[in-house]
Amino acid sequence: MPHDTPLIATIVAGLGLAFIFGALANRFRIPPLVGYLVAGVLVGPNTPGFVADAGLANELAEIGVILLMFGVGLHFSLKDLLSVRAIAVPGAIVQIGFATALGAGLAWMLGWSMGAGLVFGLALSVASTVVLLRALQERRLIETERGRIAVGWLIVEDLAMVLALVLLPALAGVLGGQPQVDDHASLLSLPASYGIWGVVGLTLAKVAAFVIVMLVVGRRVIPWILHYVAHTGSRELFRLAVLAIALGVAFGAAKLFGVSLALGAFFAGMIMSESELSHRAAEESLPLRDAFSVLFFVSVGMLFDPFSLMSNGWPILATLAIIVIGKSLAAFVIVIAFRYPLGTALMISASLAQIGEFSFILAELGVGLKLLPQQGRDLILAGAILSILVNPLMFLALDWMKPWLDARAAKAAPPEEAKPVGPATQPGQVASVAAAAKENGPPPRTTLSGHTILIGYGRVGSLVGAALKQASLPFLVIEDADKTLARLRDDGVEIVSGNAASA
Image (cartoon, rainbow, N blue to C red; front, side, top):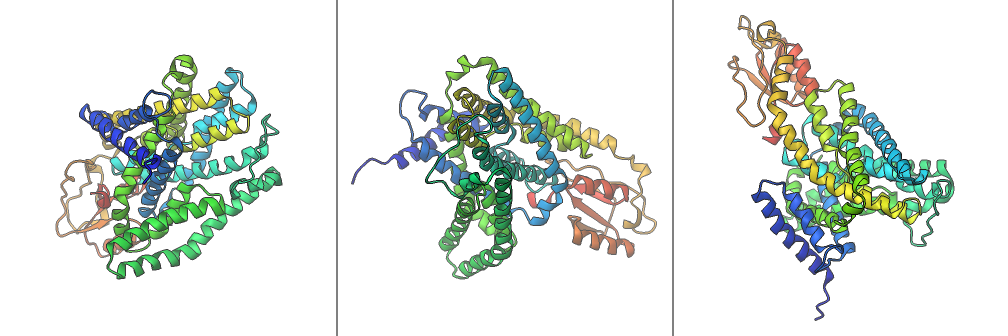
C-alpha cells in the first residue's frame, strides 16, 4: 500500500499541533484559537520544516464552516431571522459601505487603482463566520436577542459578498482589470456576460429560488428523512443522515444556486430546526463541527507570512485599525441609532471586528482579475490574522466592563418604589419591580407567591400573560430580548433577564 497520504498528513499535523499549542495557550490563559493559528504558521509554506497541503487544509476548513453554520441554523427559525431584519439589513449595508470606503481610502494612499481599492475595501468589510459564531457560542449568546442580531447581520454580509463575487468578473474590465476566463466555471460565474444588471438580477433570482426550494421542498423532505431514520433505531444512520443533509444542501446551494456554502448550511439547519429531532441532530454534529472548525484556524495560519510584518509595517497597522476600530465604530453607531442598549451595541461591535474566509476569497479573485496587487492580498491576510488574535481581547474587555454595564442598566431602570407591578399581581399585594439578573449568578428574589412563571414572552407567552392579567393572577416573565424587557418593565410586570434554553 503506498504511503503518499497528503490528506492524512495534513489532518495529523494540523490537529496534533493545534492540540499542543491550544493546550499551551489555555495554560497561560490565552484563547486557544491563538494556539491554532500558531500551529498553522508552523505547518505553512512560510516557515521551515513540514509543509501541509494548503488546498486540502482549505477544503477541510470549509467543512468546519459548513457544520458551524448548520449548527447555528438548528437554533434558529425563520421567525427569529425576520425579527431582526429591521436592524440587520440596514446595519450590515451601512457598515459594509463605511468599511469599503475606509479600505478604498487606504488603497488610494498606497497608490493603487480604483478597482484595487474596491476589492480591498470589500475584503475588509465582511466578518469571519467561524470567529463570530465561536465567540457567541462560548458566551452562550447565540439564542439571545443580541446573538440573533449578530447572526442576522452576518447573513446579510454573506449575501452581499455572494453578489460581489459575481459582479467583480463582470466589472473587471471597467475597473482596469482583466476579465477571468475559466472553462470549468460553476454557475456562480456564468452570468458575467449578461451585463451588470443581468448579473444582479440573475444572482438575486438564484438566491430567491434557493430560499423557495428550501421553504417549499426542504420543509417537507428534510424532517421526513430525519423521522424515517430515527424510527430505524440506528444512531449511526441518524448521524450519517444529519451530516449528509448539512453537507449535501450546502454543496448543492453553492453549485446550483451560486449561494455560499455557509449560507446553504445555515438554511439546512434552520429548516431542520422545525423538527422535534433538531436537538438530537445538534448533539450528533457537535464533535465533528469542533474538530473541523479548529482546522479552519490552522488553514488561516498557513497563509500568514511572518516576514511581511517587517516589509509592510504601517500599511498593516492601518489595515488592522480599519478592521478593529473602523468597523466596530460603524456597527456601534448603527446599533445605538436603533435605540438598543449600550451592552448590545458593544457586543455586536466586538463580534464584527475581524475578517476571515470571504476576505480570502475576494483577495484571491482580485489578484486573479489583475485588480488587486500582491501587496493587497498580503495586507488582507495579515489583517485577518491579527484581527482574529485581537478579537478575543475585545470580548475579555467586555467581560471586564460587564459590572459597569449592569450597574448602568440598573440606574436607567425606574426606581423600585415608583414602579408598581400592576395587573400581574394579586389584589392588595405590595408593588415591586424585578431586578436585573446576573448572567452567571442566581436570579433575583421575587415578592410574588403562588405565581406563574412564563419562559419567553413571544406570541404565545404574551397571550398567556394577557389572560393571567385579565384574571388578576400573578406571574413572572423570563425573557432575554432587551426591547421586550423594557416594555414589560414599563407595564409593571416582574421580570428576570435570561434565556432558559442556555441555562
